[in-house]
Length: 386
Image (cartoon, rainbow, N blue to C red; front, side, top):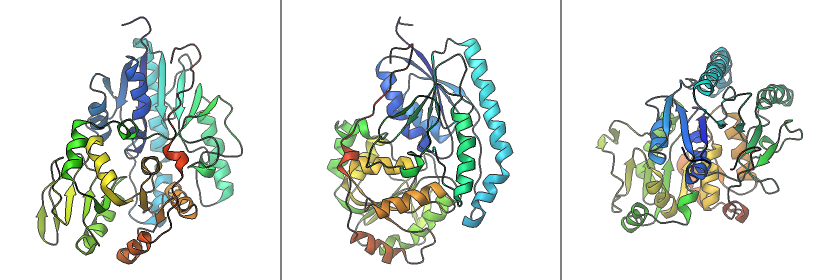
């Protein structure tokens, strides 16, 4: 190992891919400095596949995920999460023991956790990444109680990094800018996007994709936990033949079986796209493929997950956001985007998607320039050369 090379232990929460993908710019920063990355992740998971693509020289260590399941109905979402609190606490204790064992057997010099509360060590600088300082809840009293519990865990870390802008405008609103902050060094590091490093650099793949892909109307970008991902996919496939203009559906599934639209089998398309078809399906789009898709689409239909919103606002794209039913954070962000005219939002239960899409086309979007013109700011870590 080189004299100034750090060994960095990293893990991200496995509730969807957002925590994983938004950490890619941070890991890229340290990777470019030739530090050794040790990534703890659930073997065979989508997170592992994505991170292996970006960091083939990293050391991957198996760590069980939280394995949270979600309700199909909005009204049962919070109740089902509540029932799984013992499982969540068990996972936090498990990752705590995991870190203790790794530090005892490896010279770890820095630990980075994206929303994994037990992924820290008292003797090693430990960074916690989150935008949820005040977690959205149905009642303000409940929000205050949850915030106290949240801070109790966060304050066990050395530093807190918030993926948002410090001033106004900012993306997270009350989620990332609460009245009371944790009692550890806290830094706003800017918006994080796995596409940021590609925005001003055209690779052979993105260049080829742009040449083969003509501008089109809608990019239907699916993500998030099951069963809600599949429920939204079915709704979008129902209206796909009736959409105004060419459309592409990205299912957000690295490995997926063939699907059927209007009794016609649709095979997953390769990264090289053909523009003549009115509607087509791609199972999964790696960043080199996703960037041209986002660039050429007029409207992006997607969840209002924090990481997805960061991607779109940094690229200056018009988003039509459909929050996951029951996820209060996504619902809050969707309302905030709509109120600021940064995006259009509709409920997944909306009966008439076609009419809603037409309204979205005529919506007065005012995308903030501040979001696309900023860069990630990595704070100084005491005792380490960043």
